[in-house]
Image (cartoon, rainbow, N blue to C red; front, side):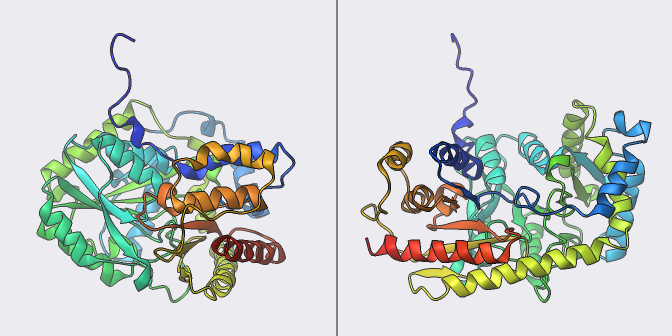
Length: 432
């Protein structure tokens, strides 16, 4: 082309969670059975959407209005319901006008970073969720700025590091948290969030809290939403139904804007997000329409409790399996449905390998050339056992080497079998 078509930040767009699927599909074509531990889709892993929820959706589909556009911000009755529920939880009070619906939080994340000033940066956690880190890095055409979640301290963030980086980089205008966290399963308790909010207040920043798993926290985790401590600091909270109902195919998420009236610049920024959404007219109508009825249903929270208990048990089983190995760092998840394993520094190298059939090795060989140590392990684990997990370094923009798996397997016996296969594989790999 006579001019360069490519956005300067295009090379920053990486989503290993799905990219490894292409490799797995090629291996599957050779007859290898794949165990999909790469992506957090409860339905794909066999979760049965309850009949009472299906009936609500089915009945709503008979309404002619659900086939039309919704208002750009979202259905008013649904936004009023969300605002009411937020307000009775305590903390900041919002109205329906503070809520904006999107076609999933991926859509919302894109709008958040696309509408930032080109020089404005958002600092996020390491390990990072790739949709955030890639979008932020692409926006800035520069590597994502991160603060550490410390695996040696139960994944607690280093608050002093956050303030040090904020103080040293005048372009940082916002702080991101994912609560409960993906990929670590860590939960930011209220006191930790309060400290982050204090930094934002001190340096005139705003806060983003991705709370897609906010109703999937484990008992005694201490989980609290950002709204409980935000005080007068400008902020954006992110919610959705894809993990919670679960209904990932609905592509239904929303933003909650806090304290827009406290800062004119932040108010203009949020208006730009709303205006950019207006160009798309609206978000999907049917999921918004059923949301209040589903969440008000007497079966809803007992159903969530049952799922949470299952995920917590899977986390306990994974911890029991991996904590026995001195070469690994693991912690029980506190929310969501992921489990992260970190290899201690110096444990992995580029000489380690599995015995892998030649035809399978030919498929993964091109990907091994410039792979990080943990990606080498994950690719060879996939080719050797068919178990598809995601490397921490390339999958989650992390300085740590390890992998993330899900806690979604419905069959507990099969889940324990997968844990056994991975454990055995780790021992074999490290001793190769």
